[in-house]
Length: 204
Image 1 (cartoon, rainbow, N blue to C red):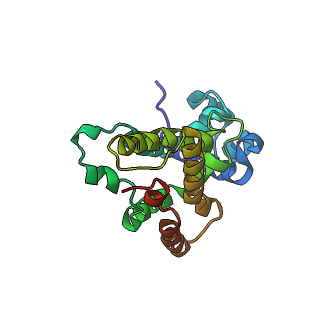
Image 2: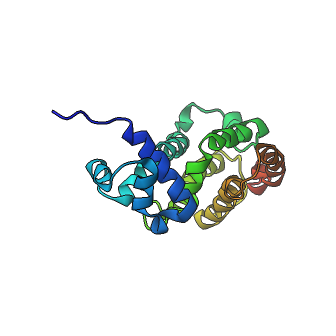
Image 3: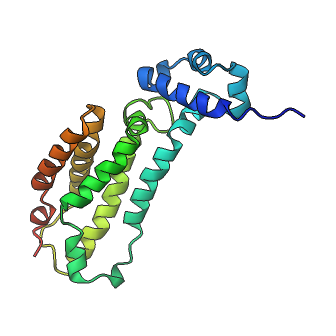
């Protein structure tokens, strides 16, 4: 019985990450990935159906982290929250936002792959779909605040989507533009001043 060479998998993933980052999914060359990993194309097809499945394997952990981030914010039990807690969810807390940036900093290479290099894969509309999911989450919080009489502004889902898209663009563009961590820290402070959600929603 042949023994699976487990050293191939990390080499292959790392080589694929480098090639996808350089050329994007569509222009990435599978043979180059194999050559740089020191494996044959046959070794790839024993593990993946093709180039797209390999791309998905590269970004899987990052996609899971981002999915978890959204899921936590869409699965809320507002019945156990006080008015003050509902109101505070709209605070642009600099410490919290910086923690989000720190999380993304750790996965920045694959985060950019998802957003900028995934055309031709199931993730090619990831940025737009992520903004839509966050819009759903933000609308839940807004409608709860509205129901409790905490928010006076009338915000349609379309308007909320525009606001969320703008907000999340401000989150991921620093990584696309390869900002240093110091630059991201400075950017975070500007963001927290710029996005005054309580004022936008006319929060009491």
